[in-house]
Amino acid sequence: MITVESLEIHVSNHCNLSCRGCSHISPLEKKEFLNEENMYLVLKKLSSVLHCKVIRLLGGEPTLNSNLENIVSKIKEIGISDEISIPTNGILISKLSENILNNIDIVEISNYNYNEKISKNLIEWAKKNKDKVTTYIYLYDYFREPFSYHKNANKQLVDDIYKTCIISQKWQCFNVYGEYFYKCPQSLAICKNIENCNFDKNGIKILDNQNLEEELEKYINSTSPLQTCDYCLGTVGKRFNIMQVSKEKYKKEAEKNIEEMLDKEFLKRSLEEDVGDMFTVGKVLKF
Ligand code: SF4
Ligand code: SF4
Image 1 (cartoon, rainbow, N blue to C red):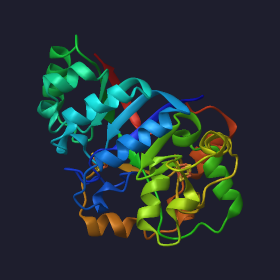
Image 2: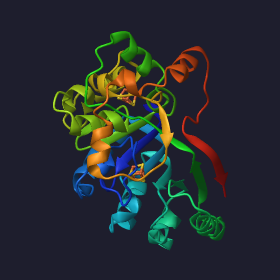
Image 3: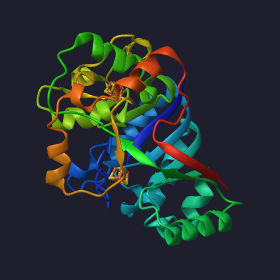
């Protein structure tokens, strides 16, 4: 049995915010919810060879999915993880019903809309529900450039970005989407948005795969970058202030070349030392 840190399921692909720098590329997603029947089949099969410490039900914004209560109880029943977490931007925090909270362990609130009133409300909510769930509130200071529409032709740079990628190497933010297992949310999102990248070349097919355990093990431990890493900044993109943008502006920012979007100093540091867990978060509150 393979044991990993985390698995992510996109219960709503779209979001009620449009953050410049969203690494899930949600600002470009159309309104779309999880295909539940397919996901249960896929997770059942996956659970026969893989177990994770935490499964994250996210998006986009997961609270936009009105069937979240059923999804949570079904995923708990499948038992692929020790814990269930819901990462949210907190805008619709009241949608996390009593039944949802009783079936999950963690709520991770990314407070991108930072202002005193919102933070105060979220802190009050976290304190009120302290006995049901552990809540983390991440107060973000900035984002990093996520991806480019233009292929990175510098092979050494692609290797370095992959090697220093905290998302895939350290956090193991593995994703399940459709019938495939992916190394990170970016590999999935880039496949959706860049024609040259194929789902089957960047992920592992789960259903009807007789060699699933073997293929997953090889894929997870591979030291070679994925095809999608050619378009990705991993965790070493340049920093910029948090802001909300239009779809057009989000796309325009990704028209720059990888080298132009790269935080060279941070890449150098990441290659030389352990830069810790937080590459964008300023402060974390735990309740
Ligand atoms: S709230 Fe999260 S998912 Fe939504 S656009 Fe911002 S970063 Fe992306
Ligand atoms: S596509 Fe590559 S560089 Fe980007 S997050 Fe995934 S593994 Fe990291």
